[in-house]
Amino acid sequence: MEAIELLQARNTISRHKQRLQQELVFVMLVEHMAYDKQVEVHWAGEDRVWHTLHAEYDGPGNANREVWRAQVIFHPSEDASLPGDIEFALRYRTQGKEYWDNNHSQNYFSNADSGVLLEQNARVVNADFNPNLHQGQRHYPVTVAVRHSLQPKRVYLHWTTDNWRTTQVTPCFFRRMHWDKSRRSSARNPNRYDTSIWATQLHIGDAFRIQYSIACETPRRTIWDNNFGHNYIARRQRLKILTLNLHCFQEENQDAKFSQIARAIDDMDIDIVCLQEVAENWCDGKGDWNSNAARIIRDRLRRHYHLHTDWSHLGFDRYREGIAILSKYEFRVTDSGYVSSSHDPFSINSRKVAMAQVDVPYLGTINVFSAHLSWISGGFLEQFERLRAWASGRHGGHLAATFLCGDFNIKAGAEGYQAVVRSREYEDQFLAATSHEVFAKIFRQHSPNIERHLAKDGRIDYIFKHGQSALHAVAARELFTNGDHYGRVSDHTGYCVEFEPNW
Image (cartoon, rainbow, N blue to C red):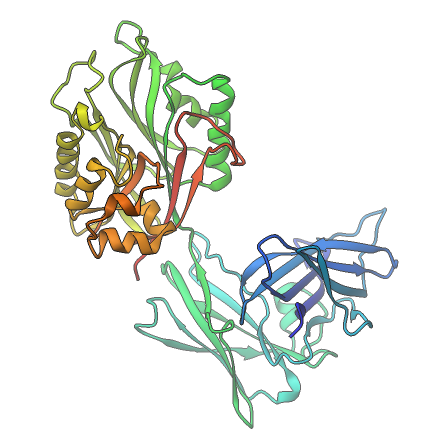
């Protein structure tokens, strides 16, 4: 196999909301030689002007290969007509080398509004795969491109919403007017490139994810497309939780950094944000809502977030210092309270925790606690035990998960962290998502060498999840570092973890 190969290309002209448009889609298979790579489509329309279209990673392929996709939509104007017929080739650059798929130096050609062009060896292809299920979506469309000369008798999907514990089979249908009905396009079915289109819809209801593979029965055999052995997976949006200590108005360019935090929340579409060292002016202990850091960040977000906040003690001799929770979803329950023995607002070891309960679409009800606990010498052990008992007492069978988030002032692997591990209830989710082997040794095999396993881990901020939860961590990212896109915004970094259902 070559370093880059065409899988399929689509050229359709259609009407969308009464407006004429031409859509070009290119899907290709790329050998994974290095993480730093550029994948491009070089193409020209009927005006013979060559353009470069950048492709993006679309998913895993087979045998150390990746699927990349590029697409673009054109609308006619007084200054420019649609591209029409196109000629194209694929280019892949990595490690100082360049690779082409130019159809053996002849380039590829795709006529205007011709539909799908399959790579010459392709037989059955998922022609319009979409990995995203949107909120409120209850039906999922699938379009299959088949080599028509195979004389397909039956095309169907094997699919599941519960990780193959149960399986459903749904037929796809061949309709000669497919393109006219689906896109108001004049493309033929089958077309001049020996491609026929079969389509169906899966009734997915409120499922979080679906997995499926495609089968095509011909007179000689059944041909499968199972996404190179991975199956096709489409899912709803994951739950994203971010925790960040704001450093209590001690930052230079503080106002600009609040905007940076808001931009990151918007860009990453974070669901739940747990904040610590949330400051507002002291004002003789009465506070000043207009100066509240969490309120300032919330008001700079593009969409509405709900805010729950409380304060614990006097910070830096001039602020009410506390904690907060921001949520895209309306609060069902909120609470807050001291987990420290001291309730003295003038003691730095007086520590409150804020709690909120929310319903996350397609995932269920979760409890989230935003905490800023003392060091070991200041009472961490007793504070964590009170927090653990409080959170676990509220963790009933109706909950999908319980999360303890925030600045715990315990180094990963040290005495306080080991106390969390010994609780056998709460587990480190950033570690679960980024270091599966180390996580298993500590939280599954109960290795006695916790400090050695985490010797190079400098975290004191965590997202802990109750072990008896219906969600699991699938991805994590450290934010607001020196090398991060959003830059430093505090003396702490932020940690964002993404979650999906266990099933």
